[in-house]
Image 1 (cartoon, rainbow, N blue to C red):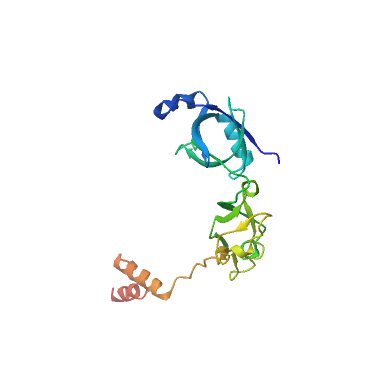
Image 2 (image 1 turned 90 degrees about the horizontal axis):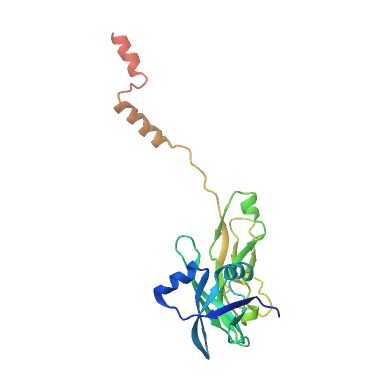
Length: 221
């Protein structure tokens, strides 16, 4: 199986001193995992951004560290991002055993068209954005599709049991967990008699003469 590749260089700089690495276009990272000694590395920031966009969150990546000569399969365990521009500041790379299954959250991808939304003006409610699955690292999908076509009215709810799992992937989330439904559109109510009466009272307090009162005044004059 062909996997995305990523190259890294050993890193001795730590702490606040890594700021100058980012200015030079490098991204600090750490590589760790079961049976592997944790060590600091640095990545090419542009290369990493390109890989992240193309490979997705759960892709297994073949990592090569300069001077090591070995290829290690890793996952993007976590990415620390800048709170404003969302640029990566630090990356954790987890070395994985490709023969062992692991449990992970996988995003839901909503596909299809709901008549309850398209024809009846309903509002789609995404009750969950991801589900928990179990699979070997190479089988973990970047997303799992949920077809919303069955949502033909406001009574139907889609559950985790409605998902079609890819080969090699087992659903861990409770199958009865609700994932999506359509909410009936709100209907604006006509002003009630009580509201109308209240408006009339406010008008009278503001000095407006109700009909009939004006006529009585004219006759008195």
